[in-house]
Amino acid sequence: MRKWNFKMKTNPKEVASKLESELGSIKSFVFLINGTEDNSFTFKVRKRILFAWYLIFHNHVSVKGNLSKSKEENGTNVNISFDRHLLTKAVILTYLFIGLCWTILLLTSANNSFYMYLVGGIALAVGIILWLYERKVFDNKVEEYRTLISGILKAK
Image 1 (tube, helix red, strand yellow):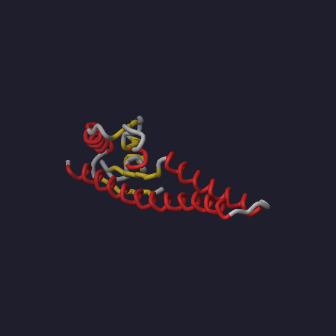
Image 2: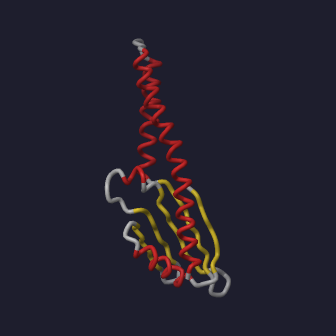
Image 3: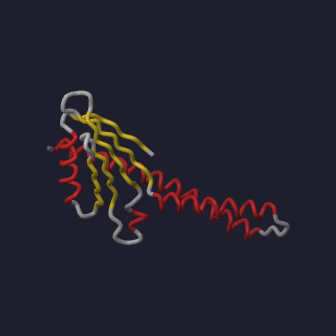
């Protein structure tokens, strides 16, 4: 999880309306915003899943944010956290768990075969490669969201 905090000189309602007008109109995003009585807003942004393979290529990051009134007059504290999608975490942990269990099972069994070790090693290697790949993609997607959000908030 990554966090990004900054302050703006406009009130939270204006910041929320900017985000809602820009991100709500883009059809490839799911944008949800909730307001409270104390002029505080929470929002969630993620890419919309249209096809199953989008989960692998497009939906690695879910963004959660909070807009709250700062101590300054007419200011806003913006707190945004970027997290990996739950299904992406589950796929990677499943491959790692299967690979480790297979290897432990082979080490404790009496019938040791080279091919059994190969299958366990492949499952473990796939999990590690997926983890490294997802880490790289996550970093790139976080930067894309940061430039998108900063561009929206500075543009108007």
